[in-house]
Length: 196
Ligand SMILES: [Mg+2]
Ligand SMILES: [Zn+2]
Image 1 (spheres, rainbow, N blue to C red):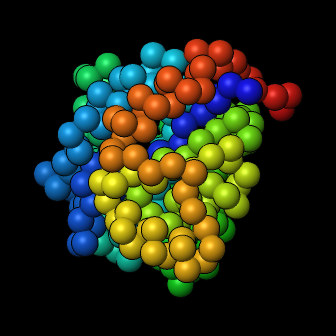
Image 2: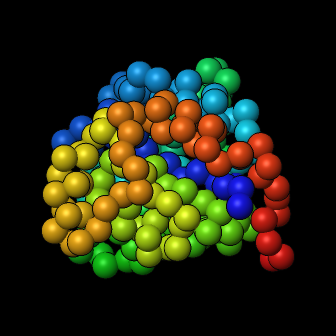
């Protein structure tokens, strides 16, 4: 079965995470190799979709306009390197808001599947935290991969305590993208992936 979609977490996967949140374009720093990874994935037929928790919005630390400005900067940087991101879905809520879209809940993945007519069993998720892996499992993604560029040590401990493991662990997004391209025959990706 070909893989049609790569879901990506943002902070700790594409750009460096910050304990005080990425609040501006100035604080946004690409992780080395992440733009190259996106260029590699863009050469396939796969959809590439960002799925990100951004509780800084709900906490009043940044506005949604500020977040969207950071995302335009991200998209421009990716495009300049030959990459492509088809959509960005974010959860603006705080954990205590108990929404259905904040990872580890699968809401954003389900929204993306509905919007783009995706099959989640033909999708993989790449993240740096336990929440990413758990959201992928809850949504029924084909596989969930962890990268070691963010909170991976805490992630492995948290997953282990819950009796869960990622399907694979990669050094970074570039290594994950290379493996996906070599393994999943993504050039066979076709859309729409199902009737909808
Ligand atoms: Mg992250
Ligand atoms: Zn939410």
